[in-house]
Image (cartoon, rainbow, N blue to C red; front, side):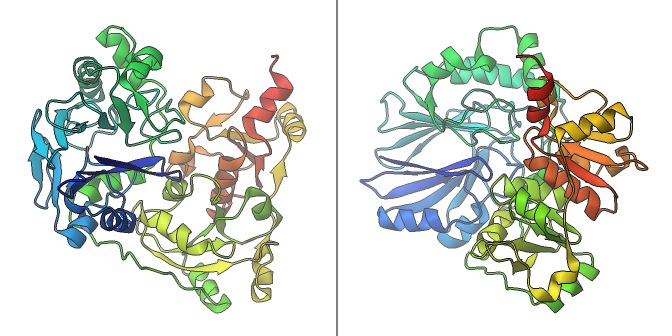
Length: 459
């Protein structure tokens, strides 16, 4: 049996290739849009991809099922509750899919969405299961959130109750030795306490996962509903794209370098400019109107927070990172990166754009204390709700980064604004977004809440 995991840090997303070495038959589970790696590996391993299984309609990225359909003619499978405007194979609870010796069993596991399924993998029929691909139902360290429903009109509470039965009646009923292989890891907005580990076992999760411990159904509902991270607005867009026929990703796509004249024209036309360099280099010098979404962080997801899917985008990158940056945006459906401008590794822009270069003000913890004592600042906390449970800076207004672009009206004007997150990466995103949207006297807090707490909260 062949069971390969493909993990991309930028989206904390895992997909899988399952193949039978004897027959050469294979399926891909939860693929991303850039499907070349699956195709290349299948060819190298002597496999023919005949099916694509999506464990649910993903909201945080655009799935690659249509790209694989075009490349291989594979059928596209979803849980029975799924509704799409392209032909799908409805996979029923308990249904068996044979690849030859390798046997796949479909488990209906609603809770994250109604159509959610898991895939139980056996090396041969009747054998103890080797692994279960749990999608967004059971994560390592948590369970999937129930408030991103994208089918029907049921409440979050109903999905949470369905998740309770999924976990206890379906997944925890599996043997302890079964390997758990979810669709996401740490950092994903599809859950709140996901582990850095990419696989586990049913036994390990039974013993260590706080969300699956013995508790009442009502206690479980309260636990999984509370403290979830703010969902980026693009999630609903991507969930919709995954249900419909949409343009395919050009697997060989390359975006062009822009001349200074072309860049100025895009800027005048209101094109969104994303600067993918480090926080420090952005602060030292950036082009007016650009938003800092560093390539060293969650670039794709955060890019989807500050720019609408379909919006024209120009990228500012270090040399050699521009094509990968465009690809990462395309994974969430942002296909309109129209070009890029490089700086040198020293952060220097082309001389023809020197008049557009600005610096970004930053605030230290000591300076913030002085401003707060004088009641001379508006402090904006862009962390997620669960993060604020560990402590807050008194007087801060809470607007999660994922909601900032659509809730600009919640940020008061008239006084200097300081934005903070936990460590300082997301606050640079938020402060630069506010400046790009016309807010004045905006800075970010160096070191974020963590540095403030170190100076103020007794250990």
